[in-house]
Image 1 (cartoon, helix red, strand yellow):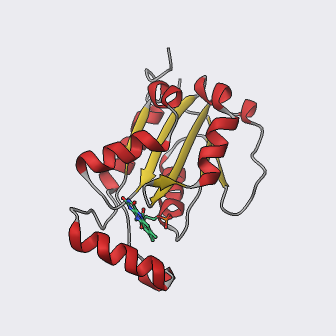
Image 2 (cartoon, protein in one colour):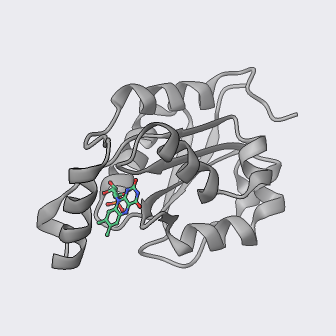
Length: 168
Ligand SMILES: Cc1cc2nc3c(=O)[nH]c(=O)nc-3n(C[C@H](O)[C@H](O)[C@H](O)COP(=O)(O)O)c2cc1C
């Protein structure tokens, strides 16, 4: 079953998740709609979609409130979709894995066809002074990935499109 009807729902503070969502939009076959929850509150009717991708970024350890609310509100509906979940963040390895785990409800994580971190960006021009201070401190003390992984985005799109990846 090729992916033929997909919704990408995301939130983005300074554009990184937006960029990844648009790249997935470009890579995924079939009809794909995008819904940016940072700019609108209305979510399209989920019954129209076979597949849903949900993405957000991590700020002070948490995914955007809009994404948490969306996942909680539509938990049962999302759990029966072909589901892909992703985050953008700067931390890597075990810390990134933990952030990914905290970002989405367990019920969705267990059902997801693919779940990944694509890395992050530090776009200083778009940041407030406070945000610049926080990211500079993070960059100085941690093992970070201040870039996006094109390979991970491509792998994510491929796994979402593969015929065998149908939820049990
Ligand atoms: C104020 C602030 C706090 C952040 N906190 C975290 C964090 O706790 N963990 C992390 O891995 N990355 C953190 N980041 C990095 C963001 O996740 C990263 O910049 C990401 O690319 C932002 O995506 P967006 O612009 O689409 O929201 C933080 C960034 C800012 C500006």
